[in-house]
Image (cartoon, rainbow, N blue to C red; front, side):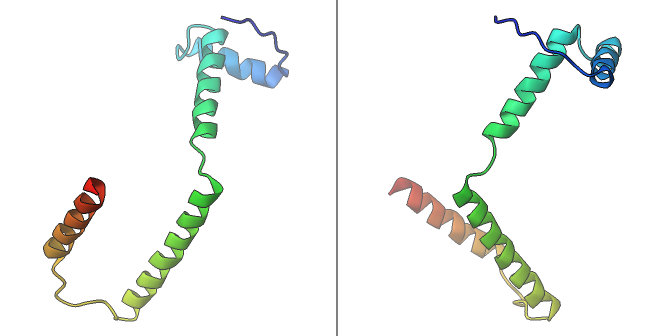
Length: 97
């Protein structure tokens, strides 16, 4: 393991010490390893620009559908079981292709 020396402002040092004193961490090293691992996971799990674009388009579609429902334009007597069974079949067909 590599050692790294850092200097902390007093306020952050007190926060680290309180976290250790609370029993959440055995020592400051464990605190920093945990915090950095969490930050690393967040950075690595960020969406790509393409994924962000897809998500934005999906949000627009969902809002459009919600607006239609608010106007009473929803489908009546929709068979969700049949719809979902059809979607599952289509998904299975794509996976096996």
